[in-house]
Image (cartoon, rainbow, N blue to C red; front, side, top):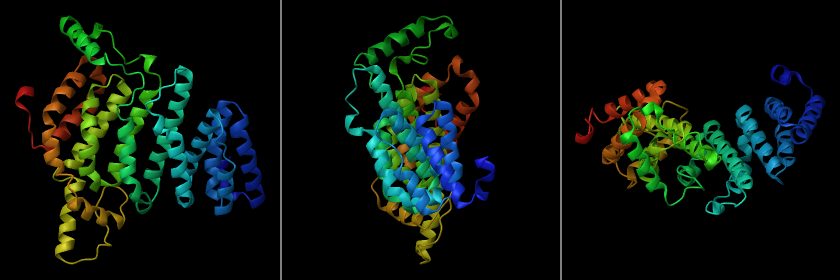
Amino acid sequence: LLESFYKYLNPNEIIFCTEVLLKTVYESDTIISNKAVLGLGFLSKSLDLVQFEKILNNLKFNSFKNNLISLNVLISLIKNNPKLSANFFSYLWKKINENLLIDEIHNCNDDFDKQQECEEIRNESLNLLIAMIDKFDNDLVEPYVDECLNISSVFVSYDPYKDGDEEEDDELSDEFNDYSEDEDEQEDYGEDDDSEGLSWKLRRASVRLISVLLENYPMILPKIYKHSFNNLVKQLNEKNKIVLFELVKCCTQIFKFTSKNGSYYTNKFLNSIKESSNTSTSSIAFSPSKRRSSDVSMMIVSEDDQDGDPLNSLFSQLDLIYDLSIKNLIISKHLNDFPSIYSFYIELLVCTDGAITEGNI
């Protein structure tokens, strides 16, 4: 009803529905609570600034369950009414940092269930950050881009239960693979193993965060190569299939943007033309997604940075990319994912003009 008729509610009905839904999200079972979260999102399209702020003031951050619900409410509000949500950017940024608990990242709780609660909260915080980057105007988010990259770097390989014997385990697994006659009969080490808990969700969300940043800010490509790309490539040995193919998708996007005809070099070329013709830096740069005047300033900064040329950075990682991708992607259990793997290699070959390292021909 709210999805279809929210625009026809009068002020008193809006107030009534808001109060009922806020009570429902915290006091009902999970299914009803989730529906109420969606309802608040639809209702937010009819709210004014004061009514919207009232919802934020009534959110509860005092327990695991309430924190999780409140973060979901914020995500729903942003997706349904990004314009109004943007007025509370500082509040949202604060809540993200409070719930990511980055200062405690190396302190794994001895209680497994408590640790998983922490991971769920962190995951929703990352999803909230992704929603903000994707929905808010670039001018608003731009000052926080570097911090967002730093956050992603914390979680891209995060696993609180990773022990020091992992390399030895990998070697044993490789030895087992060498002697197996039928790869399909091999045990799928780690892929369906619950021993790592929910940390895989954080790795997936951190990769998505990089993808969303690049999609909205193509001129940060050198920064991604300098601060994130090596970690992404190393994670191609990821055991969790969901995370692995999120990585494949992200790397494919990076290859596409690195192409000479991609967004980065196109924007850089257009910017050089603007500078040579003394045009105003308030012009809008070309991009596959929403672009604003802030992009021009970002392009100028990128050219002056010492982050290096993206294509050169890619070539420096080419051996590692082929080694890990062939070992972990070109295997029979990923046959159903051939389109994603195909796109990965096509974009890589296109942006490197078909370069293949000698050992991986």
